Image (cartoon, rainbow, N blue to C red; front, side, top):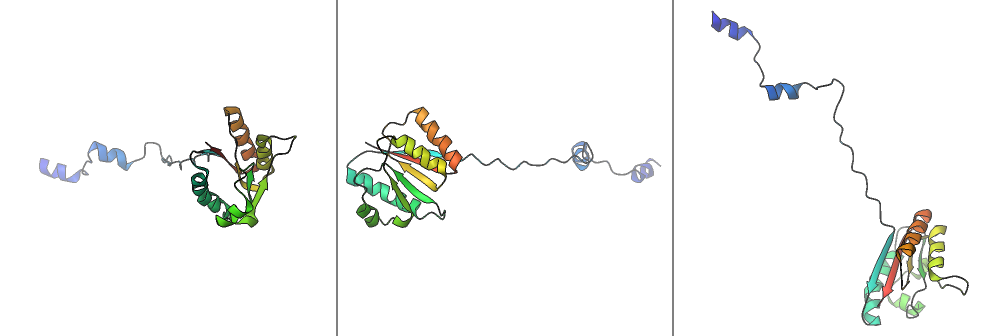
Length: 158
């Protein structure tokens, strides 16, 4: 007789399986939050030391890549060294039609000019050659880059 009682009761699930089978609060589902995209770094700095010819050899492919960006805005070079002539840009294979060369005037520093170029938003990347980039200068360049939706790259030659 006891045998028939056990057969008529529904089979019991182990505790763990029963817990997983039913949500604790109906209608509440666990949703995975998509990871927040990392905030892109708008200011970068590159320090090159060595013979000027070697430094330019390292610099050429990077500037070439930047000059070929899909972005229709300028690649702006602020206060480049005198050795970065139009002939060097051509020989390095840069797209000179997409490059704007800016030299600071007597009433403007290279930092001020770079910040202004970034803030205006006409450039996708502003490459500057500033010898001394203090934390305050880096912050100025980052804020200007944010304002103009651009990137700032400073190159220090040693």
